[in-house]
Length: 124
View 1 (cartoon, rainbow, N blue to C red):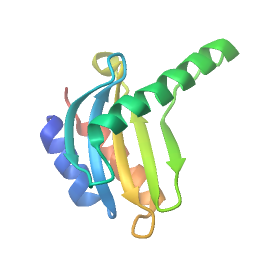
View 2: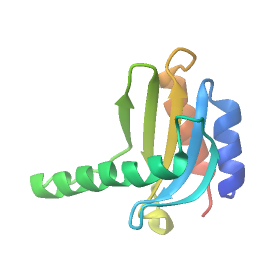
View 3: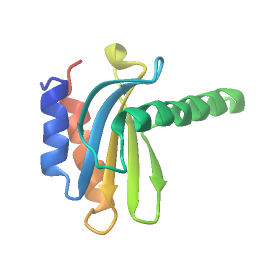
View 4: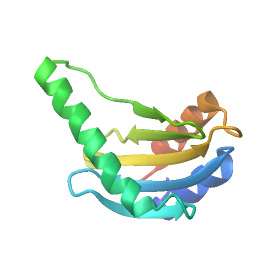
């Protein structure tokens, strides 16, 4: 099992094209941990903004009566991928991993696979 810091380091080191990673509590919008980022990517602002994305999707699923879970949410920009992975498990309700990737260097399928592995080993 990995703690937050170890999990973020694992994500940044094993996922090609990683620009920044964060563990976020979407009930408060606060980042519980961040690693990386760029001058154009403030992970605290990204954490708060992506909290709104997660809340909107959860609310929409409830309104539609969908009885399913969100694995991840992908936002594709011109030069980046932003990947939001909701944590599963009883103790992880309300948390998500956020990963920003350089679109030119990242393999999206491998990034999703690796982020899933990091999630499975994360203990908060």
